[in-house]
Amino acid sequence: MKITVVGSGYVGLVTGVCLAEMGHRVIGLDIDEDKVQQMRNGISPIYEPGIEEWMVRNVEAGRLLFTTDKEKAYTESDIVMVAVGTPQRPDGSADLSFIESVVMDLASYVNHNIILVIKSTVPVGTNHYVKSLIDRHLHHDVTVQMASNPEFLREGTAIKDCLEGDRIVLGAENQEVHDVLRSMYRPFGIPIYATDIRSAELIKYASNAFLATKISFINEIAAICEKVEANVDDVAEGMGKDKRIGPSFLRAGIGYGGSCFPKDTTALVQIAGDYDYPFRLLESVIQVNTKQQNLLVEKALKYIGHLEGLEVALLGLSFKPNTDDMREAPSIAIAHQLVRYGANIRAYDPVAVDKAKGILPSSISYKNTWESAVEGADIVFILTEWDEIKQLPLKKLPSLMKSPNVFDGRNCFSLVEAEEGKVNYYSIGRPNVLSGVKEVVL
Ligand code: UDX
Image 1 (cartoon, rainbow, N blue to C red):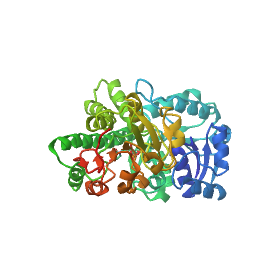
Image 2 (cartoon, rainbow, N blue to C red):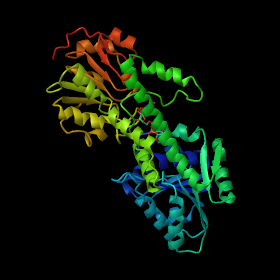
Image 3 (cartoon, helix red, strand yellow):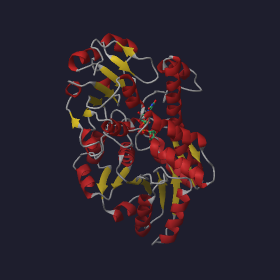
Image 4 (cartoon, rainbow, N blue to C red):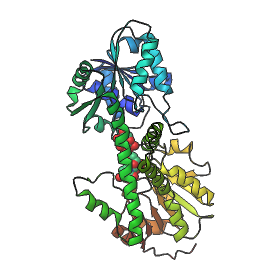
């Protein structure tokens, strides 16, 4: 099939590459000339494991091309998928301006019947709003049929999630549209969940909100574990053995970040509020997540006593491993808190440093290795559970650091490893391990 994907972010680019991989002819449309030129030169604008190789392979096979030419993009495809951003507005609602500008462009160029698929995460009712915009501004006498096809990609595993997802959600206005999109996705071999458009739009928000709820729930349980001296990792594992609960998204830590959970939870509260329904549970999920981002500094002040003038090493800055994405990363709030308490910060991240430099306090010094980040430090904060960080030899820290104090926001190590590492180890929802050989006198 001939498909245009509008937007080359991690959703649009990954979706376009995977559709091409499955044999479709895909046009990737973006308004950013530099980004389009980068992709034509085989360079991915996003950090996503494997995407560059897949992109180049499909471009060379002639199944995938990138352009800024709107007329080409909207007249040479039968299906147009919109995967542009819907960022959060100050009041928390979703900003639809990028969707609107795509729709206005499409309405002026499209010259044959097409199916318009909204893949971006949009409030319930957006598809119908888009349809009304189209009907009002179409320049040619053609039919544009709508569908909602939300994505469930996780950064860092986006290709795998695209090709091996648990389900593909399709909301369409009629059976004909459902049938066309089913055949488009048939090569993926993933179960299709067909529903109406509004339900499909809500499935996306509800799914993300529920996953965020699981995370805030286990983070609350972690706080209780610290009071009753239980171990939240064991509690989560014991809970997860129940198939009704499941083991995933029960990792306690310093909270969720990223371009989706923070935005989508806030937007869903807004959407419910627009219909005079206070979504109290989700409001609490958001409040708990904000609280989590204060935890490590609170622990450091409690167990070390002060932060003024201390050397603090941050290990991991991105909102999760295997991405350079810093959007809403807990490291942002934590770095600002540390600066406010007078700490001197040095930081290491395998890939996110370039993006972090534009976001974190300018006083931070960045190091090329975790060793140089911890050398001479009084305190280590672990903020992202990169494999490299999870595998670092704790027992090297006492000789590298001024005093071996490790505050682990992602529970990367077992308590036994902390004991054997001879560090003072403070984590989330688990007992402290005070086996640092040096006096904690600072
Ligand atoms: C999420 C959804 O998983 C995905 O389906 C949706 O399409 C986009 O948003 P993403 O934000 O890329 O994907 O990453 P994810 O792996 O879901 O992690 C989100 C945040 O939750 C990260 O900050 C991560 O550290 C945190 N997290 C995740 C936890 O704190 N605990 C967990 O158990 C899982």
